[in-house]
Image (tube, rainbow, N blue to C red; front, side, top):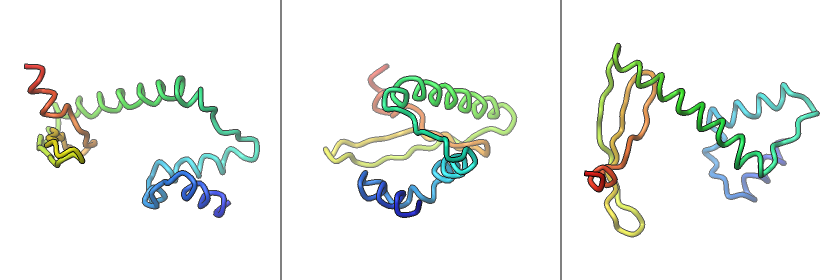
Length: 113
Protein backbone atom coordinates (compact mmCIF):
# COMPACT_ATOMS: atom_id res chain seq x y z
CA UNK A 1 0.00 0.00 0.00
CA UNK A 2 2.82 2.43 0.86
CA UNK A 3 4.44 1.90 -2.55
CA UNK A 4 1.14 2.42 -4.37
CA UNK A 5 0.56 5.71 -2.52
CA UNK A 6 4.17 6.78 -3.14
CA UNK A 7 3.80 6.09 -6.88
CA UNK A 8 0.63 8.21 -6.87
CA UNK A 9 2.58 11.11 -5.34
CA UNK A 10 5.38 10.80 -7.91
CA UNK A 11 3.14 10.15 -10.92
CA UNK A 12 0.75 13.03 -10.24
CA UNK A 13 3.28 15.54 -8.96
CA UNK A 14 1.55 15.74 -5.57
CA UNK A 15 3.59 17.75 -3.04
CA UNK A 16 4.94 15.59 -0.22
CA UNK A 17 3.37 17.91 2.38
CA UNK A 18 -0.05 16.58 1.35
CA UNK A 19 0.67 13.43 3.36
CA UNK A 20 0.60 15.60 6.52
CA UNK A 21 -2.86 16.94 5.65
CA UNK A 22 -5.75 15.98 7.90
CA UNK A 23 -7.87 15.53 4.75
CA UNK A 24 -5.44 12.96 3.36
CA UNK A 25 -5.24 11.12 6.67
CA UNK A 26 -9.05 11.04 6.96
CA UNK A 27 -9.35 9.59 3.47
CA UNK A 28 -6.83 6.82 4.12
CA UNK A 29 -8.48 6.04 7.46
CA UNK A 30 -11.95 5.91 5.87
CA UNK A 31 -10.76 3.61 3.08
CA UNK A 32 -9.22 1.30 5.67
CA UNK A 33 -12.51 1.06 7.54
CA UNK A 34 -14.52 0.57 4.36
CA UNK A 35 -12.69 -2.62 3.49
CA UNK A 36 -11.61 -4.25 0.27
CA UNK A 37 -14.88 -3.48 -1.55
CA UNK A 38 -14.15 0.24 -2.02
CA UNK A 39 -13.93 1.51 -5.59
CA UNK A 40 -12.79 5.09 -6.02
CA UNK A 41 -15.09 7.68 -7.54
CA UNK A 42 -15.25 8.17 -11.29
CA UNK A 43 -13.94 11.29 -13.00
CA UNK A 44 -17.49 12.29 -13.94
CA UNK A 45 -18.81 11.86 -10.38
CA UNK A 46 -15.82 13.76 -8.98
CA UNK A 47 -16.38 16.70 -11.35
CA UNK A 48 -20.18 16.87 -10.88
CA UNK A 49 -22.02 15.37 -7.92
CA UNK A 50 -19.15 15.16 -5.45
CA UNK A 51 -17.81 18.62 -6.31
CA UNK A 52 -21.27 20.12 -5.67
CA UNK A 53 -21.63 18.22 -2.38
CA UNK A 54 -18.22 19.34 -1.11
CA UNK A 55 -18.96 22.94 -2.16
CA UNK A 56 -22.26 22.86 -0.28
CA UNK A 57 -20.54 21.40 2.81
CA UNK A 58 -17.95 24.20 2.66
CA UNK A 59 -20.65 26.87 2.36
CA UNK A 60 -22.43 25.42 5.41
CA UNK A 61 -19.14 25.39 7.35
CA UNK A 62 -18.44 29.01 6.42
CA UNK A 63 -21.95 29.96 7.55
CA UNK A 64 -21.22 28.40 10.98
CA UNK A 65 -17.92 30.31 11.16
CA UNK A 66 -19.59 33.59 10.20
CA UNK A 67 -22.38 33.01 12.73
CA UNK A 68 -19.75 32.54 15.48
CA UNK A 69 -18.52 36.09 14.86
CA UNK A 70 -21.59 37.42 16.70
CA UNK A 71 -20.37 35.74 19.91
CA UNK A 72 -16.60 35.59 19.66
CA UNK A 73 -15.75 38.07 16.93
CA UNK A 74 -13.01 37.77 14.32
CA UNK A 75 -9.92 39.56 13.11
CA UNK A 76 -9.91 40.96 9.59
CA UNK A 77 -6.46 41.23 8.10
CA UNK A 78 -4.88 41.50 4.66
CA UNK A 79 -2.35 39.34 2.92
CA UNK A 80 -0.61 40.18 -0.29
CA UNK A 81 1.95 38.95 -2.75
CA UNK A 82 2.85 39.30 -6.41
CA UNK A 83 1.71 36.86 -9.09
CA UNK A 84 4.07 35.26 -11.60
CA UNK A 85 2.87 37.98 -14.01
CA UNK A 86 4.07 40.62 -11.52
CA UNK A 87 0.49 41.62 -10.64
CA UNK A 88 0.00 42.60 -6.99
CA UNK A 89 -2.56 40.39 -5.25
CA UNK A 90 -4.22 41.55 -2.06
CA UNK A 91 -6.69 39.42 -0.13
CA UNK A 92 -8.83 39.95 2.94
CA UNK A 93 -8.40 37.16 5.48
CA UNK A 94 -10.90 36.57 8.30
CA UNK A 95 -9.36 34.85 11.32
CA UNK A 96 -11.30 33.44 14.27
CA UNK A 97 -11.17 30.42 16.62
CA UNK A 98 -13.82 28.54 14.59
CA UNK A 99 -11.77 28.79 11.37
CA UNK A 100 -9.97 31.09 8.98
CA UNK A 101 -10.71 31.81 5.33
CA UNK A 102 -9.95 34.17 2.48
CA UNK A 103 -12.64 36.61 1.47
CA UNK A 104 -12.85 38.37 -1.89
CA UNK A 105 -9.62 39.72 -3.34
CA UNK A 106 -9.28 43.47 -2.86
CA UNK A 107 -8.73 43.87 -6.60
CA UNK A 108 -12.20 42.38 -7.23
CA UNK A 109 -13.70 44.62 -4.56
CA UNK A 110 -12.22 47.68 -6.22
CA UNK A 111 -13.66 46.67 -9.61
CA UNK A 112 -17.17 46.20 -8.16
CA UNK A 113 -17.34 49.78 -6.82
